[in-house]
Picture 1 (cartoon, rainbow, N blue to C red):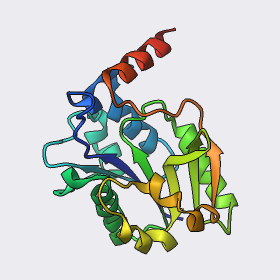
Picture 2 (cartoon, rainbow, N blue to C red; picture 1 turned 90 degrees about the vertical axis):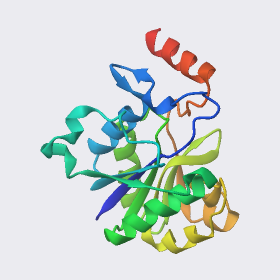
Picture 3 (cartoon, rainbow, N blue to C red; picture 1 turned 30 degrees about the horizontal axis):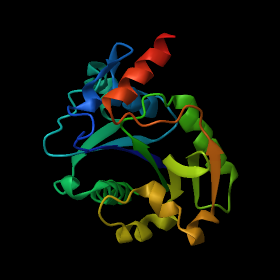
Picture 4 (cartoon, rainbow, N blue to C red; picture 1 turned 180 degrees about the horizontal axis):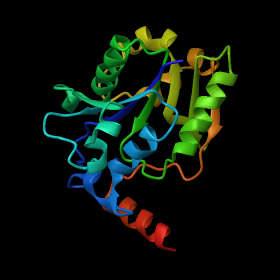
Length: 204
């Protein structure tokens, strides 16, 4: 089964006031941590969707070496500024060209995610033969990371504006066709306060 992850890294970081993906954490960066988890997990390939101003300088240098470089690629979404839906659709189009059987949507600002979290989602998906997706949840609400079948690819064409994959699968007709699982400490780092609290928690 070819499972491709899409890391959404095309946001403008408006609430942070600066490029949050390059903020330091554990000797690396926020987005670099997400990329590392994806590359070391059981996904087949990783696609990073960026905007025209993001050149993935936050990526760990070792991943540009031959050992890793064939396992991931970068695509630019020129319309990323119009909302997350454009990044999602750009990523899915790239996955269709690579003949993906399933796609996992990841956010580049969730550095607490580990390869074990991602593998857990993959394993649950493989065990849930009749379900079209497996999504993590926070307080009962589904959100990335989300792994979904290629059977849903065409339905993502209906995404508009800043509507992301999490909002998409909350549609009642779709929600009944998937599995939700808990992933501990699932937070997005959007503001300076989020970042300070995350760093403080790691140091405690």
